[in-house]
Length: 316
Figure 1 (cartoon, rainbow, N blue to C red):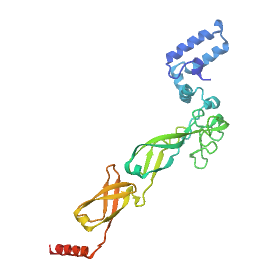
Figure 2 (figure 1 turned 90 degrees about the vertical axis):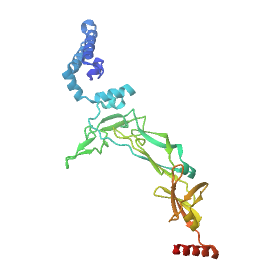
Figure 3 (figure 1 turned 90 degrees about the horizontal axis):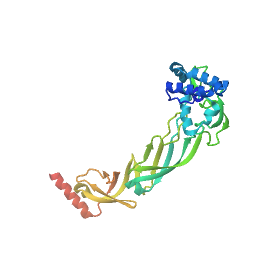
Figure 4 (figure 1 turned 135 degrees about the vertical axis):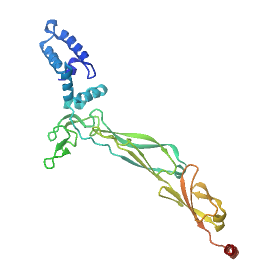
């Protein structure tokens, strides 16, 4: 029996509080006061275990799991595993939660301008609080690992995860009625801030819950924009097939309206440009690479004008 429970004290109470509780209970349970000898024997045995600071320290060191069970009991009442199993294993193998991968289709307008609040729905697995993720309403110690969740390999002499209990330290006798193998599933709505051109985002700790002290997984969202025919994505940059331009546009510079589906983007061709590919950033922060097509000469007069310009350049 737990001496703290017998004396009606908490783990956080001082040694003086334990002494006062013992004396008060002894007055009530003494046979001369109408009590029983069995109750007095329980009180004396409990006080002998934690009555002095030295004995109490030694007892707490051997029964350190009591602190965690008292926390569970304050939230859930008497935990199912603590009630049936009696003692938490000294060392369970922590199991990290798995990542959740989502692919979200977004309109091209959202890809271009962003969205301050984008709701994303997904199913998340969380640990059952009633059974502490064990999936057991009634359980017993694992016979192979002795409740530790791991065992020493006789060949390599290294500790390995117990394959019989899967690292939980228990064998399930009766399943928990409140969950499915220690997990609860529910639909979650997570609001994301979408920045223009973002292809993927990762939210730490928003994935499936871990077991036995393991870390939660991550939520990884991949975005799939609906691109127009003249658009593609390369290295995180929106690549657009632009309209035709003329050689004089490269020399003199020009503002060109580029159509991307239903969106229109104005691109500035700098003066004295050497290439028909122009990279820029929109007002919303989206990186765009526009590939213009250089128009051929459409008449003999235009060709003659270019020949005249070439002669001028050669003379200078």
